[in-house]
Length: 187
Image (cartoon, rainbow, N blue to C red; front, side, top):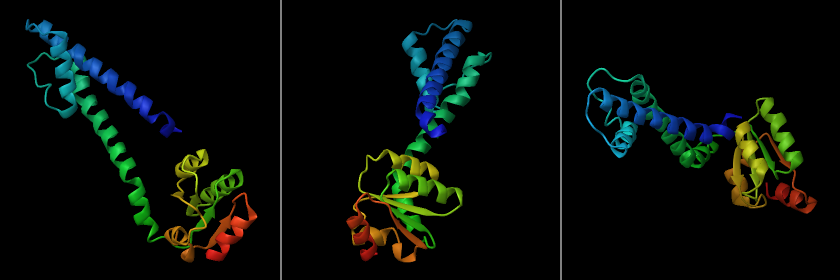
């Protein structure tokens, strides 16, 4: 659930934190009788991302105190999520190399998604193979913690990548019985 709102929530939090930084630098400049333009205040607030500014003489407005801590944390968290998403597939492929005693589900329609949900609730490790990268069910499979591989489930090499030879079960839920038989034969 959180993942659906993570980026909008981070965007709002970052904007609020930068706004607090802007207001804090503006108020600080007014308290210390140092004229600053709005552009100067925004520039200093943006520098809070890299912890490059924010070191000012006391007294420091509470808005600036909050922004000095929240801005770098929010942007560091966003950067960590971005790096994780970039390397998630490579990490997943590395983890797949050591997977055994799992269930491979080929085809991700309504029945396949229901099966993956049941298996994950039982604590089973699941590898999903589907040829359509735009299949909306794949996102839910990822959220459930299943490994997702995109490609033709009848491809021998993709079945090897899913470690079908070390799997406890192979379940073919493609809409075409011929395709299901071909997957089983190749496995």
